[in-house]
Amino acid sequence: MTHAPAASFTALVLAADRGPDDPVSQAAGVAHKCLAPVAGTAMLERVVTALAASAQVGRIAVSLRDTALLAQLPALAPLVAGGRLTALQAAGSPSRSVLQAATGLDRPFPLLVTTADHALLTTEMVDHFCAASRASGAEVTAGLTAAGVLLARYPQTRRTYLTFRDERYSGSNLFALMSPAARALPELWLRVEQQRKRPWRIAAVFGPRLLLGYLLRRFTLDQAMGRVSARLGVSVAAVKMPFAEAAIDVDKPEDLALVEEILAKA
Image 1: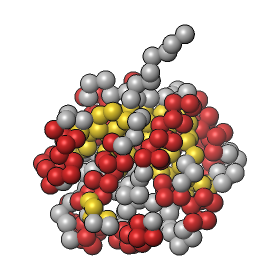
Image 2 (image 1 turned 180 degrees about the vertical axis):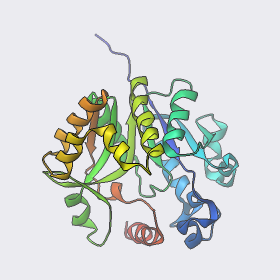
Image 3 (image 1 turned 30 degrees about the horizontal axis):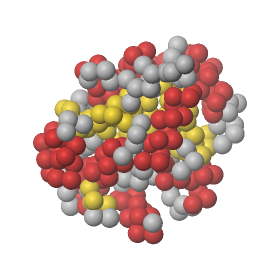
Image 4 (image 1 turned 135 degrees about the vertical axis):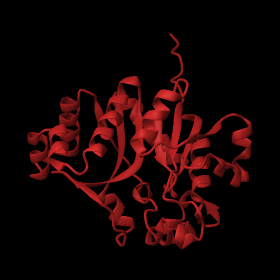
């Protein structure tokens, strides 16, 4: 008995930024953060190249404040000419941009979402995340890196962590929307963004019992994902990334220096 091959992921790279006012843009001397060079190569080019080399990924779309920016990266021209790489006009926020891609692209699912400042992204990371997302059976997955994995290699790095009963985890800027039902999550996050000045309404979205359990560290990561799934009516799973570098993105000039140091030693 033969089985049809699984559909390739459509990759969406979120690359909108604050322009020349972004601290990373200022540190790198560029007009757009995604063009900041890391070891001589623009961050966006690094991310797209890693995605393009993955057998899991088919089409790649880049969400940009200025869609003409792709023309400034001649190394990506063959992907554009071949129709594999396209630019999308960014919406007003990351969740809006994800929703725009999920509704506007032809056959977008499964949809892999990452960011242009994920300068250490590798094809191995992409392959691991996509394979684990398929195996999870969830509608939505998120890549997370355990603090123990990250700090064992880079004790000097400072990250924001989600704390659970079993471990602390840092986001890895890797998300997957596996089917149309997954659109419910960015739609929910859009509502959260709209209520960011009314924290009590954000709490109502997730429910007081879930939030209290998290704050008291009653849940392991997997238990928390199960409770979030039940609360939202969409199955959500965490993909634990075994790569320390998966948790390091370039949010500030110090991150840019750290990434340069890591690549110099590679």
